[in-house]
Length: 116
Length: 112
Image 1: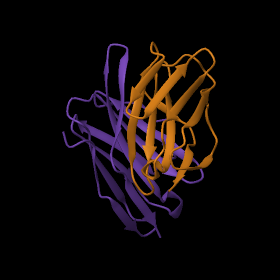
Image 2: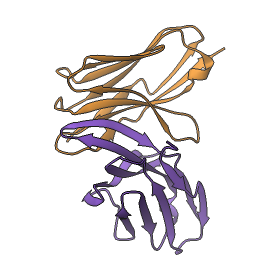
Image 3: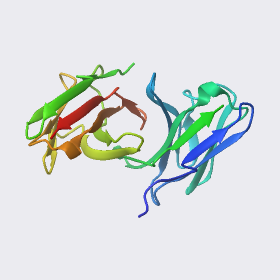
């Protein structure tokens, strides 16, 4: 398996532009998570999906952020309009949960976003 | 609210030393605990996963233990090598959800 695949690896954009980050989870995994990592705040969960349904989006900073999972093999995180304070590394992770047992996360390599 | 703390924040040791990284959490009701390694500018690599019913897991020179009642986990690295230099993160999965709460990490440097 190729693992969790994120694109792009790096994104530099100007303030006010729309940014779309993409994630392909591991085939067969039924949960997908978007995290943001900064030096100041560490790893923060933004949103997670279970069976393509958003379960908890309490970590989404504000209405400028939105996420979708149209099918089991693809998810997007969109920021519109982007601001310099959105600069961070955005990670996608997926996992498999069966009954009450979860088998841990597998992370993608991340997207380093810089908003200038 | 679950909080995860890792001590020390940074550690520098000579090659060959055995070392222990600590992780503590405030809510003992967890699904599992996972240790990750993160190299500078890279993603997170899973090292060990301990389910709530388990006491420890081993992989090569790594051993992770879990004591739920005291809210602690330790990652033991035997015979450390310069290639072990990285940031080590522990994460606790909260009850009723399948999301992890991460500690702030221990930045390890192993000197040749």
